[in-house]
Image (cartoon, rainbow, N blue to C red; front, top):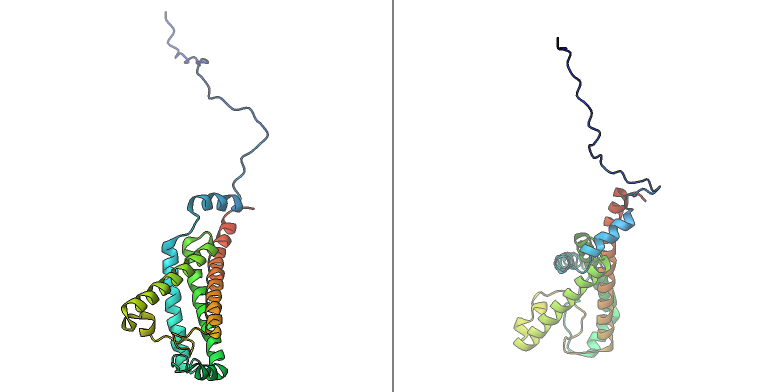
Length: 214
């Protein structure tokens, strides 16, 4: 009589087991913040002209606001008034010219500081280069508008039509004081833009250090 006990399935020892790599004693460590930032910078770094453009817009907006506040407070009184002779310009420079020039330098420095910061925050990497790009855009726009005004006529001089405070020396007179002031403005705006871009970039480095070990 045949047995009715259930049969136990036999184990198939011929199945191929997954290969296990021999231990090497080394473990893959997660990337540090420095390594992660370096990899991201290689892909997304460089000058971002879109961010620089919006930074330049921010710089101009803040400059107009601050200059308006200075004008309302009377700090920049007399900056926009033209003169007829170099002697009159020298007299004004001795009284209100120096204070007005310093006020304009501070305003432009703060404006480009904000513009560089906006560009640095938007671009995330290479903040100093973003700030320089903001400054370059501002310089190119000023040169283009000034050239357009010189070629097409004074009525198309956008900078003059805006009636922004300027050094009390006639536009056609190139004096030593005017040249020194121009150089000071260029340096102040450049340094402000570079510092602002660095500050905007620095914010993202804080975020990276918080999100990665090491």
